[in-house]
Length: 135
Image (tube, rainbow, N blue to C red; front, top):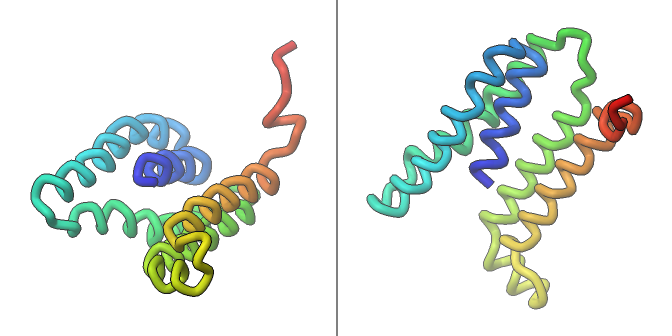
């Protein structure tokens, strides 16, 4: 999830702030995401991981509001909403599993996050631009 969310953060920066900055930031923020998981596992300290998870959730809406650049933003909003819902399912993992008995909140988190990505692709990328073949 961290790798996917850091990649999304880089894409949002590339699309709405600066193409050059978004591309240059991809590798460093992916490494930060991986380091946050490593730090969490080796030090049993979630603070760095939590920062890496939640900073983009604050920064992305700000970028979407203030850096539109005549881009369609609805798919990114749908994805962000799906991610927030996914985090709620993760938080209530046990309660959801006790209630549903056949699936846990953690499993539903991944399904909802994938659905959010589907909404982004369906809303913001047309078949002509996303699936076109080179001439």
